[in-house]
Amino acid sequence: MPRSLITMLTLTAIVGCEQPNAAIENAVEPSSSDGSPTITPAASGCSDPRGVASGTIVSVRDSVDLRSGPSPTAAKLVNEKATEVMGETQFQTADNTTKLLEVCRKGKWAEVEMIEPEWLAGRRGWVPVSSVRSIGEDSSGERKYVEADFYWEEDTRAHKAELTAAVNQVVRENQQCKTVDPGTLARSRNRGSVSDPVYFVTCNGPDGEVFNVWFKRDGSSA
Image (tube, rainbow, N blue to C red):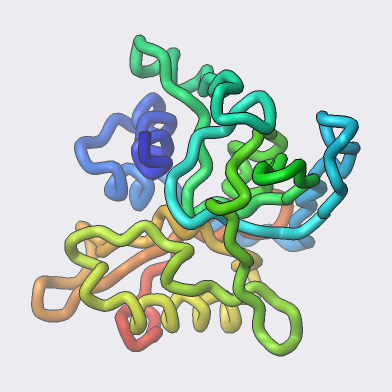
């Protein structure tokens, strides 16, 4: 199941909305809190004693199931929240919008722990090494979002380069926006117009606060 749909299911349980990104846009309000985010991934050892420690921050190329061990026959991990909402078994996945700690590797498999989005933080599982990709960084070592980080929809995929640049500009210029949830990038249904569209993305702010930032394709505020 796409993570954006899981996000929608979690939020619609609270606000009830027809469109997944509309739910995200309407449910997340700005915050003025100060402080620094505290994301502390558990760095405990590999669940397989024969694994080789890694400790690298990564993502994946596409949606991939998290498994209980380093094997294609290992059980897929169940997403209990999504299963409860959907009424049928849903499996835990990582996709290109997630930020992961690669805990260790064993052969062609990597054990990963979710860091972002924060509502999945701490969940662990095994994924094929072939699905793992590096996270973009700028010259100072700060996170730099790339096109592969985002979930592109019909009304955003034609403007990948512009919107990726705009999101990086938001993170650079908004001191409260420490990181973003790439799975939330979308065209606003409440602001702008067809000829002058407005987009938004959900920021992760200090002390776990989340809020939306609206902008145009050139990175200007909207």
